[in-house]
Length: 373
Image 1 (cartoon, rainbow, N blue to C red):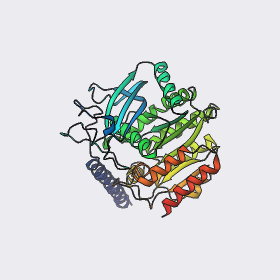
Image 2 (cartoon, rainbow, N blue to C red):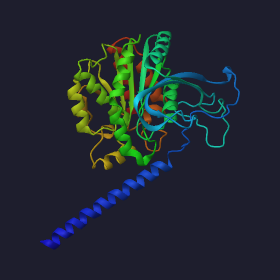
Image 3 (cartoon, one colour):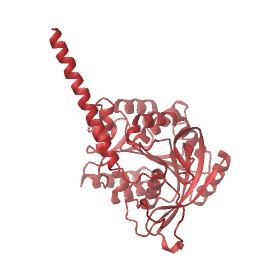
């Protein structure tokens, strides 16, 4: 009996070691595919360019739980701030831009706005009232629509700004884009740190959403990705507990892309929130390699983003869209919602709809048809 127990323990140890080795190997592979790691949003010298030589110029408003960086070119880093910080970044899109892509300057290349996404201006706000005033002016000028983007794990401040710019540009979203950027360490090995940073950011996302609801916005859409969906769902759960789950009627679409959430946790969140008046849009893909890694780290538990029982989730009041057959340009199939040219445009069309549930369902049905092709 003793030998049998020792054999079982040895087998268990081997399984743990194999899992650890697999996780490290996948992490290294992810790191190798991560690409640009400079994390600089501002360059030292920008090539002079006429307005007619760029494809777009977008103002991205930012509420962040990141600390200001000691490097002024990074603006914000991966360290946590106990309070919200506010800024606006103007980003230009180059004429060579291809839908779904983010043309990034690599090390040693010039800061040329005709070739790369470039931040042309960064403005900081030292108080919430000043930030809210600037937001209000932009919201009024853009028809009262706001889209809040919550990024995922392993995302630097620069990556988050450029991703939202790409989504806004490619989708043709006409409203005010707001980036809620929590303190991701922007390293593959920082998964646990990122998870804790996401948890620390829940209250500040609630503060941000309530602030937006007090502006002149008439509709607030939320697009969240990966671990950012967990932050979003936790915040919506908190709003529901306070009796204001729809932000006084201003909450529009909630798009949860590749959710890095344990399935049981998600169900618990939805039960507390209750069936939404307008179904949340859940974008899943069973070939999402990043979520496979996350599932391994979490004890081989399924994540919502690669969960195969769509009917099970739909009963909680979400519209499930399976993107497994949709081609993505990310080698890990984790950003299909933004890097597939047709998909990002159709999501943009959905967010632009303002005519009620009939037109909303029509666009969602077309997204589903694309996913099935």
